[in-house]
Image 1: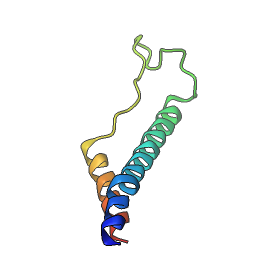
Image 2 (image 1 turned 90 degrees about the vertical axis):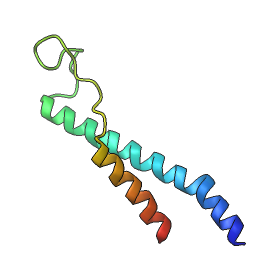
Image 3 (image 1 turned 135 degrees about the horizontal axis):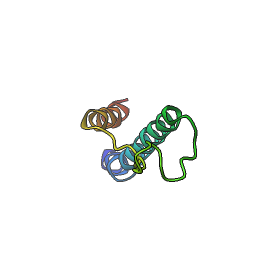
Image 4 (image 1 turned 30 degrees about the vertical axis):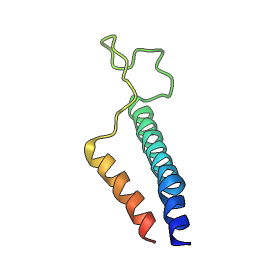
Length: 76
């Protein structure tokens, strides 16, 4: 029974938790970017010099936080 529990945790639950938390992080960063830009649609030019902002990449600190949250969910 313990082997089944561990296999399910490692094969299904942890990857799902990592995917969900990472997706939420990207969505949260995208929403902040839209708010700081002033409007949601930029027409490809956001900062006035002809370069559009890309989707903000998570920092290593944020990725460590996601990993800790996955590990913490596992311990509960």
